Length: 254
Length: 376
Ligand code: HEM
Ligand code: HEM
Ligand code: SF4
Image (cartoon, rainbow over all chains, first blue to last red; front, side, top):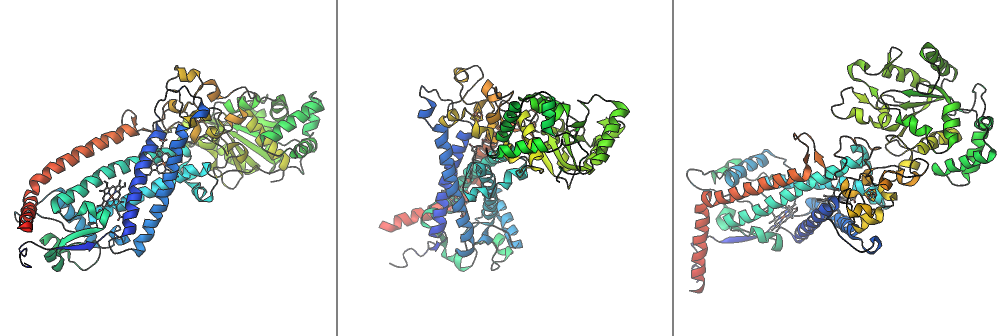
């Protein structure tokens, strides 16, 4: 009975995304979607024909209100994720995002060859197996975190003058640095497009990895699990950016 | 910075007001108006009145560089006659290329004398930006470049007022590619208190208010981080605009001749820059409180904001992207980028089914095998 399935590689279940990371991820995704929708509305409100008096409706007001509410969620959630980058498990660690070793760049190159150029090695198709983020994903998330920062700076910079709370007021220097609200607003608007394009590519790649590797990529952000073949695990062929344990050569050898 | 002592004897403002035939009543009305404009409490009226009654007139040098004189115009047309009559026109101006009668050597002598006589005491008002390109030849007066004059005159100034958008941030002449190298004052002069009073032009009452404040307290008014007097520039036009309820309700003018325009809806969608413009237009208004652009149906163009000339179109809210041939709209570019991305992903998806077909196939076989074995 027990050796019935032996010829099929056994999968090991790895707890990759801890609950806080998952909560962070979905709050973040939700907040960003809401911010994009309300942001679009704020930048170009739809033409309304209304017989009501202005005093009886508050449409732009609500869109802005939701934008600012989502902005606060987004901001504190982001701060939380930064904190978790220091106390969470190794897949959540900041070293997954910021290259601190040559290995990181080698892995980016390897991912590029395998998943984008789809190069073969000795006529064999290759997989790039990683448990946490692969290095390419890591550095793109790092850029995304920078975009979060830009959006928070310009957003709260604009908000500073509308708010009486000290927190947004801490950002009052941003429009001053940029020479005024007009440019601040434009930068805020432009960088929105980064998020839109990021989201499209991101979701596509999640599906891609699931499709090609079949290791539970998509659901990993829900349950936290990814699966890795026992022999890959034992031979240490999976990748985690930055730690020194694996040699560069092995990545491409696989 | 105190400017009230050691002046060569001069009449006070009040004496001058009387001499011009204004009544005490006119004077008090003027004082309370000014006090309100500069955002002081009512109790300060006495203080302002006393200052104007007792302080001797302040020597003012008013220089014109790259500008259109709309600042002077705005000041002269300021609603209260005393502003033009007393503060500027008749008494205070020791040197102003536009308004003084003297010309040529005579005028230059006046300037020299004022500078020497009131060294460290005079208020220097500057209208216009300074062309720094081609060694400053684009604006020369009496054989000197604007920059030379600025350096000489600012040396002995107690404080500097940068009138208008030209002197505060360069205005349209510094629009890309800024052929003359037009430069605002604060970038050229360091170590002197500089008050920026941006706007094209600034509101006359605001200009008068700044001067009265300086006169009354002997120091410059409280400035915001961009160097503008807080009393006038701490709110966005949008925050005090009477069309704001329409904005909040989501009711907008779509084109200038539509029904909504007639109803006086918010001008946001036809390019209003009120939400990013710090100025007192919606409060003080223009021409003695008659109206202001938004009230007459025209969106705010943001004339008191730095770079308003390069920061997108006047009648369009969408953020334009210059440098793409015809100005492209940021959202159009975004959509193109999104389309390219989608196309790229489609190609990648197809390529995956070829490039990784064996891998996918192997996984599938493996999975099917499991499926069959499981219930057998
Ligand atoms: C992914 C995050 C965000 C996106 C995609 C986003 C998007 C946008 C967009 C497209 C606009 C309209 C700009 C225009 O008028 O052209 C806008 C306005 C604005 N956003 Fe955001 N935003 C984000 C985050 C934030 C954050 C964190 C804040 C912080 C408070 C914020 C505050 C504002 C403010 C104050 C405005 C101007 C609203 C007004 O003046 O009525 N945004 N946002
Ligand atoms: C259906 C939608 C989505 C799914 C299925 C999804 C799934 C995932 C998965 C599986 C990961 C882990 C990726 C890895 O292994 O490297 C991840 C990470 C991430 N996703 Fe998403 N995602 C979605 C939407 C979004 C959206 C809308 C955003 C924000 C714009 C976003 C931002 C991120 C970020 C920043 C990470 C890095 C997580 C971290 O370690 O902190 N995701 N997502
Ligand atoms: S007209 Fe301009 S300033 Fe007035 S509420 Fe509308 S957007 Fe704001």
